[in-house]
Image (cartoon, rainbow, N blue to C red; front, side, top):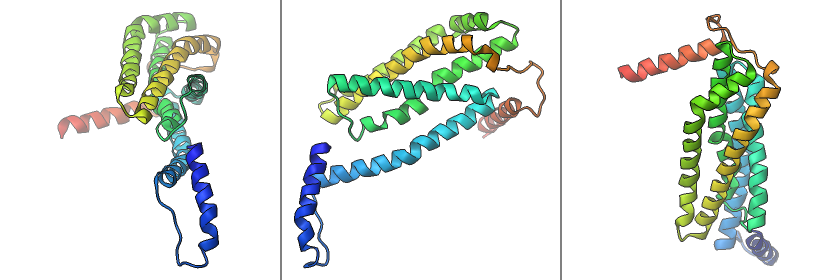
Length: 231
């Protein structure tokens, strides 16, 4: 894209003296199209990425009754993004129209394991287990499913690299790297973080107030499930 942007800029400078002689002067071609698409994508990411992060924070805060817990998936996504772009630089994979979407993918897709693990962790805490015991219990319950889910996600994105189209190959490799980094950070960082910051989480009692935010979320989910099963 850098080379194409230079070409577009050079053509713009060549056409500028002729703007007064014609009603409209414009350029076409691959450099112009790719540069404009990249600019539009960057502008969209400036809106979509913060918006998806905000929706994620609100949803987790309502589901887990913990604003602090909502920050964990975002921290994981940001760390995974830094690792991914660093590895891409080492491998010579450029940031193109597709690989630019990886941060949003990490926020939306990569946060699923974090949310699931935290939800189960708080459930074990409500059962009366201590922080370390709750983490061990979560590992025994969800360990295999977490590993298989991560494996299938990595393989699914990585399979895109088998195509003959270079931009899809780069996206497949980069996205597989991103999901691998996200998985490693989840299984290493999240248990350690929960163990150290266990006092920051306040799991609800099993018989919580019906007006509690998490109870309302469960009631809303049950309502949606009933509607879907009766229609």
